[in-house]
Length: 126
Image (cartoon, rainbow, N blue to C red; front, side):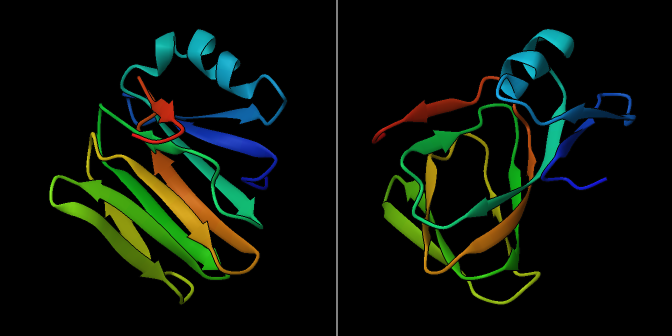
C-alpha cells in the first residue's frame, strides 16, 4: 500500500481503515467516518508549488513530516507568522490545534501528514 494512493484512517478505537484516493475521497471520509469525529488521516502528499490556501484543524494537533524536498511551514500566530523550515528528511513540525497554516515549497516535496480532520477549515487568507 502507498499512502499516496490509499489513505489510512486512524479511528477513535485506534484501528486503521484504508480508503482509496479518488476525486471524492474527502466527501467519502466525512460520510463513512461520521464527519471524521475523533479520527485522524494519515496521508502522503507531493507538492511542486506553494499551497494555494491556508487551513486549520480545530480538533487536534497535526504532525507534518518531511520525506523529501524542502519546504517552509508558515504558522499564523497572534504575534505574527512563524516560519518552520523543513529541509532534511524526517524533520517535522507539530501544528497546534486551531493554528492557521500554509506551506511554501522550495523544490518538489513529499510530506507525511497525521491530521485530525474533523472540522478542518480552509481560507485564501485567515
